[in-house]
Amino acid sequence: MQDKVLILDFGSQYTQLIARRVRELFIYCEIYPYNNPPKNIFEYKAAILSGSPFSVRSEEAPHPELDEIKGKIPLLGVCYGAQYLAHFFGGQVGQSNKREYGRASLSFVNTKDPFFKGVSSESQVWMSHADTILKLPEHSECLASTPDVKNAAYKIIGEPTYGIQFHPEVYHSIDGKQVLENFLVGIAKVKQDWTPDSFVDMTLSELKEKIGNDQVILGLSGGVDSSVAAMLLNRAIGKQLNCIFVNNGLLRKNEFEEVLEQYEGMGLNIKGVDASDQFLDALNGVSDPETKRKIIGKTFIDVFDNESNFLKGVKWLGQGTIYPDVIESISVNGPSATIKSHHNVGGLPDFMNLDLVEPLRMLFKDEVRGVGKSLGMDPLLLGRHPFPGPGLAIRILGEISREKVRMLQEVDAIFIEGLKKWDLYDQIWQAGAMFLPINSVGVMGDEELMKTVWPFEQFNQQMV
Image 1 (cartoon, rainbow, N blue to C red):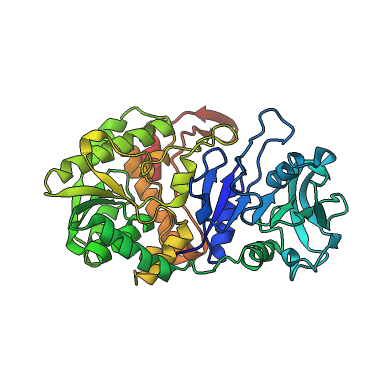
Image 2 (image 1 turned 120 degrees about the vertical axis):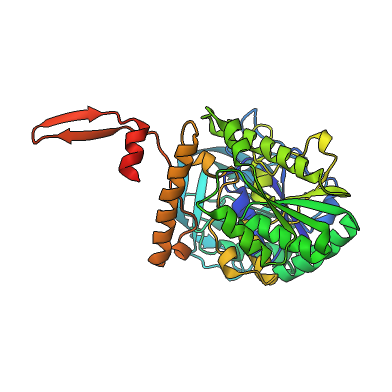
């Protein structure tokens, strides 16, 4: 059984980054809201409490249930997590004389404790808190200090519980990764066996058992996530996988034809469906980005449902959902809010009678690429820039029209081709052209300045 680490989220902007750093150590971890932890705590080898925008002294402070965690498995409190362990277990947290935010250097480190093995006594760390720990919890020992923070790190004597007021997950904490490795590997004895190859082997076995002889329909987008999901499912169940690539009218220039040809070369059982009119008609006159997302999500479901009716024995809908999609669609009921809805998350309407299969649901984007490489996928496909699920709909600010889409496709194609020509494409994480509703100003003659609001048709002529 694979070792797992639990991360309880209190709404910190850094929670996903904690998980990323843990995964970089080849350790599998999962994020749960503090108020909805997993029931099977005993399956986790260690736990981490994240930071939070709240103060532990506030009436609205998040209160996790730690009876099954503290003292039972190794526990690390980060920032709010460290202050929570201090404040509610016999210590004292108060407001600092000044907000402690930014770079700091450790002035004292107990390097004899395995928690700080290999960490410099003057290591740079990153602080981000208004409160500070004035008194440690009962039976505790200070492990590190900075010139401004006496209790920058501590441990509770007699149990594997640690607290740090700095953020080891951020780049500015120079030895942060070493601290996490010391805690997870050295203290918690978590195995570092989370690799792309191990994920592929485990997932293929799970998919075969889960799906059996059923048929699966999967909507391909042309992006990395759905492509890797398709390859995994194809490796597991072969021709039982029925891929649908939908032209929603919001793809890049010539993308529908080019991607279809590429997918057929990968041995996938695929059908192209041109539903561009259906999408663009539904989006006519809509300007709100969130409304656009919901319309596109509903229309995708309508198209998939229609296509699934042409197939026999379809019981599953495959999706390229990845971990950030899941996390961003979950509210922690107070400390964090839903960032956005996602067209891959939230379940399906009852009338479809399909269950979801999401083989990449627990992976970050870089891990998806690692899995794709393990499957032998084309590096050009794996290196494609992320493209929003709603496509150009959310790269057009304001109302959508067919002419705006056409013009943005042309501009985007010129832009991306330029990046590739100058060997910049692979050096940039993501790039794309945007259509902005901006008026222009024209100069007429040498002296007269005339403000002109150009009609869209004139702007189109000038650009194309």
